[in-house]
Structure formats: C-alpha cells, structure tokens
Length: 179
Image (cartoon, rainbow, N blue to C red; front, side, top):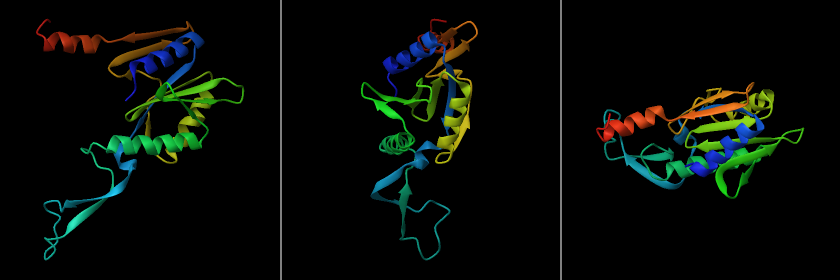
C-alpha cells in the first residue's frame, strides 16, 4: 500500500514542477498474480460433475480473499515495470521513476490496483500508459481525479494543484454522529 509520505512527495513534485498527472486503474488485479504454492479447493456448488464429487480443483491463478494475492500482484507488476525501464525508489517502495529522452523524469505510483503517472509531457505519459496494457487489462482514468479518498483538481495553466477530503470528512462526522 502506498504510504502517505510517498503520495505527498509525488504530489509536491507534480505541483512544484507543474507536471501532468493522470490516473490508471488495473482491472481484476489479483487474477494477474501467479501462485507459487499448490492450492486446492472444493468444487463450487453447481459445477460438480456427476461421479466426480470427490475431486477437487487446483487453483492456478490468484483469487480474491487470500492474504497473499496482493503480494503476488505487486511482484508481477514490479517485475514488469522494471523490465520497461523504471527503477524503484528505496525509500518509497510504491514509487517508480524513469527518465525520458530529454532527461525529465516520469513518476509512477501504484496503490493496490490504481496508478498515478506524472511527467512533463502528456505524449510521453500516453505512450507509457499503453505499454502496461500489453500485459495487464487497464482502464484509463485521465486526468487524475481521486486518490485514497482525496479529490484532486489541477490547473496547469495557473500551476495549481488542489486536494480536498470533503467526502472523507463527511463520513467521519457521520460515523461519530457530529453532522
């Protein structure tokens, strides 16, 4: 999971350097992870073949609800993103960087199944956004609007980046009956 310090770092760079900020969502992230261990499950009700009730199913791909799926997904993504030229920041394990041809960096933050991409030029981000699609099913959500319960709005012409937690504050007030 992305640390708030990592998110603050990236958003600070985006604001101070006036970078483009887009968001991408990975569909069915856990189905991308490969299992290393052998895991079996009972046949699902309604899918049991007659005379084969005693058989079990071997799970070959990650499933929702198991604690190791998130790690498997992250490992697969980490291997892939490094293979296309990104490097990981030691102090921020969910932050990856890659230099562009003009030397300016592209930043990528991954948090569970959502990614934020930022860079100087929109064209470079669009091209980069296409590469993971070769391996993962992704949904383009550009421009970035929401991250970890925070609303994002950016006006690059005015070099402004705004964050709002109005919805989160409303939920907290409601939970503690303070509305």
